Amino acid sequence: MKSLILIFLMKFYLNNVILTLVIILFFISCKKDNPTTPGTGSPSTEEPFVCEEFDWTLPPMTPLDYIKDSKQYRYGVYNPTNQNEIIYFYSDYDNFIHQLIKYNILTKQKQVLLDNVFLQEPPSWSASGWISFGSGEIYIIKDDGTGLSLFASGGINNNSRWTPDGEFLIWDHTGTSNPTTSLLKKGISQQVPDTIINPSGGGLDISVNNTLIASSQFSFYYLNADFSQTYSYTDFTMLPQQIMGLSKGLTWNNDGSKFYVSKFYGASGGDQIGLFEVNFPSGTYTKLMDFCDNRRYSTLSCSPDGKYLIAQRIDCYQQLDSEGQWNGNIVENSSIVRIYLPTMTEMKLNL
Image 1 (cartoon, helix red, strand yellow):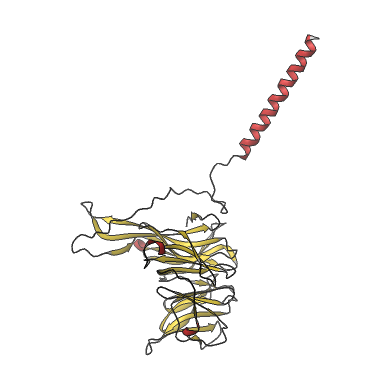
Image 2 (cartoon, one colour):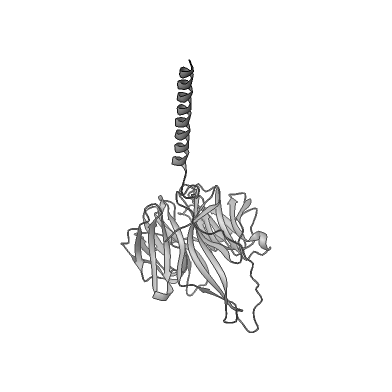
């Protein structure tokens, strides 16, 4: 009888040991080696950010100047038909390299679309595969790097944006003899542009519903446009609520129900400086992010699924002289980050 009890106890003990080992192995197999940024699938390796406020007291007879470090990654824009692809502008000032580059976020593959080019504002990528860029003169190039051609010249031409169908390019034009700025429209094979708005407003973006949002220095205006018609800037409607500050990045979301804007130098203090989500057409807004003296965000582009923003992040520091005193220079380092909007988690792209 004792031997039977002993055998039973031994079996019970072995079964529990085996069960315990199985549970331990299960949890080990589920353990992740690196924390991941939600929705990105890539490890988040950046150090925690510490917001700093600068002492802006300049030494006597010292001018304030903003300078750029050697390597800069700027003007990131999504492919409107592929949320894994972006284009951006890369500069290496020490080695005189300036390139327009296409990048796949998943495969990490790069393609230099254009070399020896200098951009002063974001390019625009169409659903038909064309990219426009340039300030003064506007050029277009296919997103495979072919078909480079001059598209608009004479006077000042900038702020180019494609219509949602990718058929027409719209841009601001200021003539040499007439300082009034008009909004022009032209198709790829069209010779003479059409005038859409005369006069036009400031920087703009176009929603999937053909709604133009224009940003003057301190206000937002919109126009539900029929691009076969001609309008005046007086046809625009002011949003009921405003964010008083200088806009440095503006992009619609994927369905035209809201847009995102980056505001610098707010007229009403810190509450008007940061990254905002603005509901359309009510104008009600939510501040998504505060900016600091040592970090702000500029160019914005929303992904085709509406879940991400590509943004130009500008990190800054005060340059010191040999005696450890600020010499009046603010050094800027620009990088491209992807922000996951549901959690406002960002990932710096290793370009």
